[in-house]
Structures are given as structure tokens and as C-alpha cells.
Image (cartoon, helix red, strand yellow):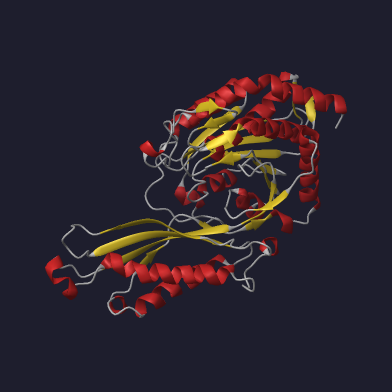
Amino acid sequence: MDQDLSTRILHAVDDLFDREIDFLAELTSHPSTRGQEQSAQDFIAGELGERGLSVDRWRIDVQAIRDQPGFSPVIGDYEDAQNVVGTHRSRTGQGRSLILNGHVDVVPAGPADMWDRPAFAPHVDDGWLYGRGAGDMKAGLASNLFALDALRALDLQPAADVFYQSVVEEECTGNGALACLVRGYRAEAALIPEPFEEALVSEQLGVIWAQVHLKGLPTHVAYAGSGANAIEAAVPLIAALHGLEERWNQADCPHRHGGYVHAHHPINLNIGKIQGGDWTSSVPAWCVFDMRIAIYPGQDIAAARAEIEEVILQAARENAFLKNALPEIVWHGFMAEGYALSDDRSARAGAAIGALEGAHRATTGQALERKAITATTDARFFGLYSDTPALVYGPRAEAIHGFNERVELESLRRITAATALFIADWCGTETI
């Protein structure tokens, strides 16, 4: 890229950065937990419309995506699950098309009294912006938008079609990104600024969610020995699942991907929720626990699911009560494959990575680090199901999914600058 243009773009990002912080603070103030994303999407749609982008907003139709690769099973309806896409159409079409993807949904904040300040009252302190979703990943939605703004401030725009996506469901299924593919949004590369400390994600794990339902035998606690405690019955099943977790973490595990060869404990099991019983003095008749476990890129998801089911059922068969009352396993939420950008040897992937490497170096003066992460992102939909190299590259954030979540503002500035340079290189530029 021309050095003068690069310098002008970097200055434009700096000039707009106060407005970017204001945008991020406003977006973070919307409590866009699952099913409550509408006000945040209203805000995004309005901002895209003001910039002259063609705005497409629609409710996800489960029937339209149910049979597509990558679909995750859902419980309940999607009446309030709405995506927003802003489309820029190039006049010349001389460059390469791009998807700028981010998710607007956030996880619940948890007990309010465990935050230093209210979770949805964002504030800036000592170079960090605090609030639920500030890092994961509303900062990324801000960097994508203001990278385009930086070009516009120079009377330039991408010389290729660009699709700005604000999707829902990333935190539990990924079906929002899938719905964008089904709606026809395709491009030659995708950029997803998830908060992984200004590194390029080379590998990401897949995820499986399940619910385990147990039935006990209720009785008055005075006669507890004649009953069967459904909550306590969950304990040996959870222990068996941790045994599976340990086996999948072994160095000689046949599923282990090469990107994780030096990782000590890449596969994590989490028992995220447990409910059961009706009365303190009654032996509980029921228990339900929700589990999440990761899988490696390339690990067969159907085989992994079958292994999980067998581990649970085998542990139940070894229990005196459960062997005659086997648990029911309900698959819902994430059924996500892992994705490794490092496995994509195509010329297009190499070119996209090279363009991002150049943009990162021009912004930071440093080489672009590669990182294998132990989480999942929406990148798999592009990389696995639409032949689109997906670059996950975002700012430094801390305490995502935790209390006092925050994103580092100078890191956000650098990501915005690198994204703007990447767009100018990958898509080319044309005058407005």
C-alpha cells in the first residue's frame, strides 16, 4: 500500500477515536443478553443507515437453517432473534469482497453486587472501558464500523462489496452467523475481531452442549434411605465426564490437533448450571445439569457426542439406583466443530493472512502473533461451510464472561487502525 495513504488512514482513525469510544459506550449500555438484543440492534441499524449502507434486518427462521451444516439445536423459539447486516456496494468492483462480522449478544452479568459498577453502565477508567460485552465483543463491532469510517473521512470507500454483520446467538449456537450464510451473504474473506489480544487465531476448538435429566425417588427426609436423591446421583456422572475430559487432554489422544500439541489442557469441561428438587425436607425427585465440553478441530462431532453419551450412561449403569432409571440426555445449544485457519493452504487464505500481517506491522511495528485458542467463535461457519478464510483478530480484553469485564482502549485503537489498513489493502479503495 502507498505509504502516504497508510499514514492518512492511521491519522483518520486517531481523529475519529473519541467518537468510536462514545459509540462503544452507547452500544455497551444496551443489555443485549439472549432474547434481549433488539435495542442494541436498533442502535446498530440506525448507525449503519446514517452512513448510507443498505440495511437488512430479519428474524432468524429456524426452519430455513435447520438442515444446514453447522446448525446447533435450540430449545424454545427465535421470535426475538434478529440479525442486522449493512451492505456497501462498490462502484468499480476492482477489489476483493469482505465480511466484517461481530456478535451483539452478551452473556448474563451475574449478581449485580459482585460488579464494582453496574454491568450495563459503561465507564472509562485508566485507559479501559468497562461493562458487560465491552470486550466480548462490542469493541469488535466498533472497530469494524470505524475502520470503514476512517476511509470515508478521506473520501474513500472499499473498491469491493463489504458486508457489515451484527449477529445474535454467537454465545450459545452460532446460528446467527449461519443465518447470514443462508441469506446469501458471501465474500472472499471474513474478519471477526474477537478479543484475543491482537493475535491472529490460528486454531479454535469446537464446543458441545448437553442437558442431563435425572429422576430420583422422593420421600420425606426422615426416611431418606428408602428414597433416591436425584441431585446426588449427578455426582458420579459429573466425575465420569471429568474422566473423559482427562482422556481427551492426554498427549496421545488421537483427536488432538497439531495446533494444540504444546497446550497443557486445551479441552475444558464445564458444568455450567444445575437445578433440582422441590423442598428442603424432601429427597429430590429430579435434577437437571447443563454441561459444556470442547472438541478439537477435525474431531468428528457425531463420534464425540456418542462418546459423551456412552460415558454418562456407563456411569449410570454402575449406580445402584440409576441403572434402573437411566438419565435422559438432551442435546441443545452448541454443536460446533473446531476450525483451524492453519489448515487452509489456499492462495486466498495466504493472501488474506498476508494482508493482515502487513496491516498489523504497519500499525504496531511488530510481527503478527499466531494463537491457538481454547474457545470457539463464529469463524467456523465461514472457514468450514463457505470456503471463506476467516481471520479472528481483535483487541485486548479482560474478564470476559466475568465481573468487571473491560477492553483496553489503546488496543482497540490499534485494531481499528489495522482493520482499516487491511480493508484498504484487501478490498482496494475508490473515491466516494
